[in-house]
Image 1 (spheres, one colour):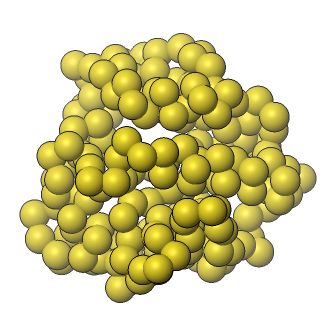
Image 2 (spheres, helix red, strand yellow):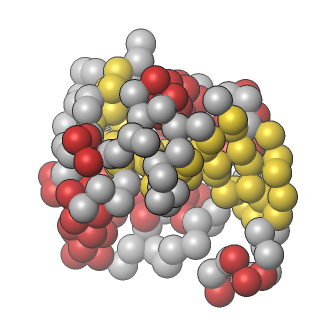
Length: 184
């Protein structure tokens, strides 16, 4: 049985076009930009950030969770501007035996449609398989989020089921949320 305990801060992961690094307090402005963008929050179950203080609170929550081994959370950056987050990607909701986890991600609209998220997902999945030795990764996606579903399908995820009403937060009761799974 593996644990994520030895992975705070998150290890830096790289791809040909990206650097994935630990999310930090200096990323609050980027998080505010992400979490206040209607295109980004449209497919999440969170309310839009109303201020930079909301984003700072979120980043502090994420850092606390990372330190408590609840999740691994990376800022997605470009190599030439590693201080400027253009999105995030995480592994969270680990099973008690650390055999499974859930994948989550978001990207500023101006960077969408260029294959960057597919590249980040591919790298995080390799880390999940090779380093964390996970057996399965899942992702929950609203049915209307076709680009996100395509990213998952291209990485080998398959549709498993829709979340039941009991499994969804109040904000998502009116929408279908699919569970996609990848078994290593």
